[in-house]
Amino acid sequence: MNVSRNDHALLRVAGLRLSFGGLAALDGVTFEVAPGRITALIGPNGAGKTTLFNAVSGLLRPQSGSVRLRGVELLGLPPERITAQGLVRSFQIARGFPRLSVFEHLLLYGRDQPGEGWAAALLGSAAARRREAALAEQALAVARRLRLAAVIDNQVTALSGGQKKLLEIGRVLMAEPVLLLLDEPAAGVNPTLAEEIGDLLRALVAEGRTILLVEHDMALIERISDHVVVMAAGRTLAEGTFAAIRDDAAVQDAYLGGAR
Image (cartoon, rainbow, N blue to C red):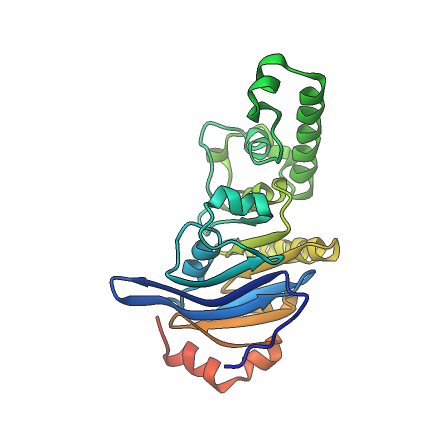
């Protein structure tokens, strides 16, 4: 497949290869993510979508290829360095610290924590106090936006499945990313909440953010995505608008008879 090059791409993934015991999980994956859009990454089970997210975010190290965010090579950097570059991801299964409240959990993922420097932590400077107050305001604003304000003092373990999904998005937003990688943000939630999550993602893009997401809800993908990349058997199979992808014979074959 020929992949068009966008000189203004925010993220460029090129020739990404990753094997486990001789089995190619990623086999030359290549695509680009344009800024200010929702790019959806779809494909049958076993296509390599989550493996790709793990490789791009630094949890796995591919054997070859390139991952560039705003021209900066991310391949080989540890996850915290990749996050510092502005790429932040969510997970299929919402993660959390069981003993922390929603508010504390959001605070934990804010950028430029004043306690990260020993001097600020020990001396409690005015600048550190201002930053703490700003992070608290940010956490409250994120909680309100995600309709988590009513449970902001609850422990994460007390949340419903849908609320945990929203908190996972909130965690990403607190890090103020350039690019959000969302792994099945609407999986397992009721249709009404899935609609609300879709509206939230479109609103974030309208504010200038960029999203790359994996999702199996094709109705949601059709409604919110600007561009769709299809993976199958560890390869980039096709890309284009949802309408073009839906009518592509190779894509239909991959879903009906391809990798599982």
